[in-house]
Figure 1 (cartoon, rainbow, N blue to C red):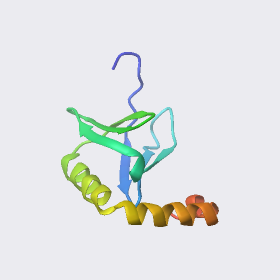
Figure 2: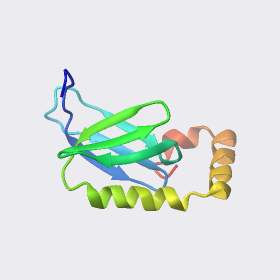
Figure 3: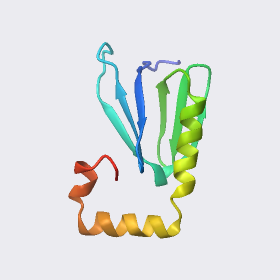
Figure 4: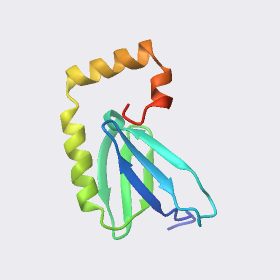
Length: 104
């Protein structure tokens, strides 16, 4: 992995995010929340889920990824320009909703 530490965990898909939570037995623990409209590509290698945004690439150790990738692509396709504008308005008028709601 070229000097990278593999972080295992579970990925969760909500209406608008991918949330990855590391397992408790990792040396490094925590979570990442990736807003679906920012995702430009989701792919995999043998045991890695790769999520790319315009500014960052995430690599998560994960098995049984294809169903998850398919679900991410379905949810991304559901977010059209009208839905994206609605989300922008919600975030602009209620920025606290980003932290408090797993659905945004």
